[in-house]
Image 1 (cartoon, rainbow, N blue to C red):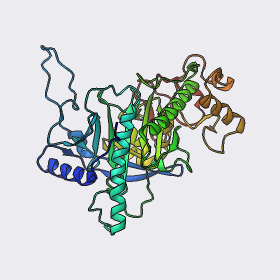
Image 2: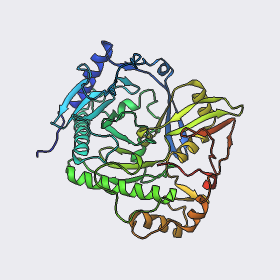
Image 3: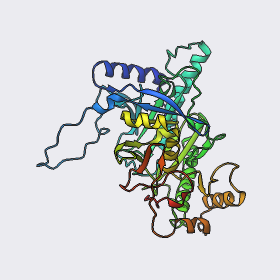
Image 4: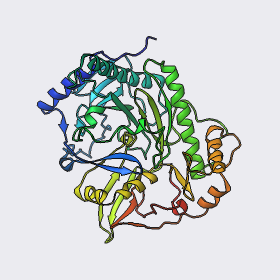
Length: 412
């Protein structure tokens, strides 16, 4: 089959469709306030949209009649549809956008969001990235610094898979954000770049698995990289949660074994295993301030809060964000503070974990991890400044910060 290609004018097409849909009321855009919090050495965007609380709600359902689950990607609104992308996929705007020109790559026929991605899914995603990269190069060559051709800084694509990933729709879709529009509201000299681009030199609080990719590579090559990273993520979760490491590799098709996020840019493909969607922020008096839930945009280095109490709490106590990030996946420091990635970890521990990820056959979790996570879960609370952090998956709080000895065993 011929390689999937996106229209060469895709950035212009997305921009014009977004502008028209917004002006005619077919799309809702929610402006945000933004600040930068530093998670270790990583600048992380925190955004707050007051108007999200007024997001339109669907009409009440008639419970007396059988209801077919609503699928927003089955018959997309014509005003939101951008273009078809071969026979297998199409592009449509996000009806409820926090980032301008946020659009979505969906499968034409229903395919499960919880299944392993196929070669065509990744090939179509890269085709969109290539169209934005071509426009960016044209802008640079012609000196169009105002971004009139739409390419900007390229495209960030992300995928949410599983209960703990931030996924909300069962119909398979990959989301795409123009990086230039992700910078809206930031000063020109703000030191923020997409997190996926920084993972070679900086260690995030959560484990990630990344490889270089390049524009023009084949769908088969891209899919091979994706499967390799996905399987590493599966083995990392198995080791961390003490699930038995499977002798065979995770299947290349069908339902996924874990929750995870995937991100793709023109240079990088990243997979991040997830163990929790987020946490609830609670005051010392026991009042719930809100829930900080994270999806694949965490691999861009962004987080969104929906109420002012959360916004103020995180700005006042930036270390809270670090601890939240550490607990939504496999933390990069989980064995008496030893780092999962990077030179800080004792070599023996790092080698043991690396071997388990790269060679699952016959390799059991270390005694240190087995001792640390065996027995009934121990739930504790920790105060960070004036805020308490609770799991969003359960009502009981769990410890944030320090050694992971008190962490509950996550459900995957």
